[in-house]
Length: 339
Picture 1 (tube, rainbow, N blue to C red):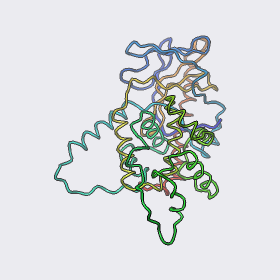
Picture 2: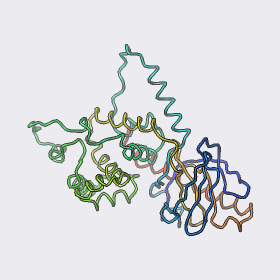
Picture 3: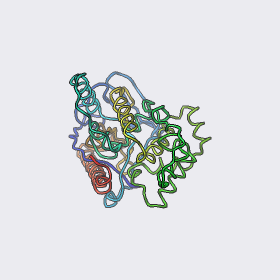
Picture 4: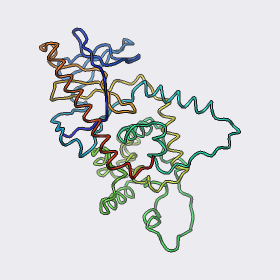
């Protein structure tokens, strides 16, 4: 399995008898994490809440080949870092209180989703994807909002443009219908124009392609927010180059608002590194993936030195993934998305 990450530097310190805590994490941080029997991972937070996770249901990362990391990006389903969210909230407050009602200075017009969001959230493309995903899952960003609906008109360009031909059946500025979206995806594949989807996890795209409009509507009715958000992310990015300035600004505002309202009481995100028998609690800040806590399945049989060696290997892997993600982003996307 290939793996993906960004640049990280975290100081790992061993805790007595339990796992390994990394860095300074504010409440509710992990106070204890242990690998129990029957594929269960037991987590206690600093606010004395307890959780049991089924290891089989967690994201597993194993069989990683470092020399393949420069070929693709790696996406881990993790929460956003508390300090990053605090930074965004403070930055938003400064912008809101520092802008005068009589200020006539024109804001720069957003050109792409990437350039509009990058000014606020920073980070690379994996970070960009995570932030949009959260705004969709939390339902702060609604792609069927009125501003995303195209005005009804009989106007036709002369001569007929390729954009008009491709989008004339769209009711929204993005292909907000599975049949239309899948048609647009197939055209992009045929034309080798999938740059907007680079960095999107392949299983998101696979689910998008395997889901009919009827199946999608059923997912919405059943409240399957994660799957719906994955499909909506692909739809949004397929329509990204057709968005106008107002639509880009709308998406930017909704993503920023979602992050400002982000709840820090979410259950920690844990990735299982099978190669090291390790469960690693991870988060994402504007620099990349970071390690918050590590526990080993066979921890009671490991010396501190053996734990330290494994931790160093995991830390190096995360560094490599972060660096690879950043290199892929710069190489393939920096010329496409203006900052």
